[in-house]
Amino acid sequence: MTTIEVANKLVELCRQGNIDEVQATLYAEDAQSIEANEMMGARVVIGLDAIKGKAAAFQAGVEAFHSATISEPIVAGNSFAITWIMDATFIGRGRMTIEEVCVYQVKDGKIVLEQFFY
Image 1 (tube, helix red, strand yellow):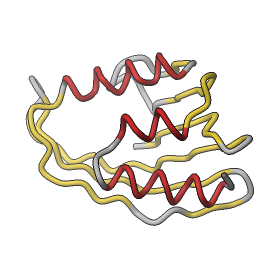
Image 2 (cartoon, rainbow, N blue to C red):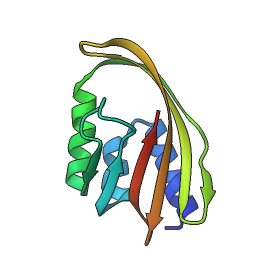
Image 3 (cartoon, rainbow, N blue to C red):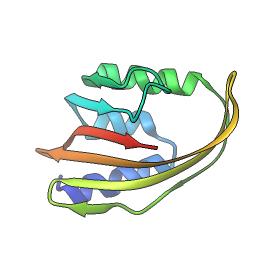
């Protein structure tokens, strides 16, 4: 897949709430994930299994999702970015809106790096 194809597929699946499918089909086994801080757990994780574990831990900390808005991707070379605005109630932290910029790097048709800024 090209970078634009990966970007469009990620947006499509995320809008449908299919995060597991995003990870299973679009990520490289040795992908890296970098968070803006440690609010959501470990700041840096390496490997698809670790990324899946981080996502599962995040999901487990959510009491209720109220809404999410995901932008169209902006693609440049082998990278793309989206904005993601999420309104959710977190266990023990209450309801909050998180606005983030998500940046991805693609190599050989797979996401090898994701980085979040919020």
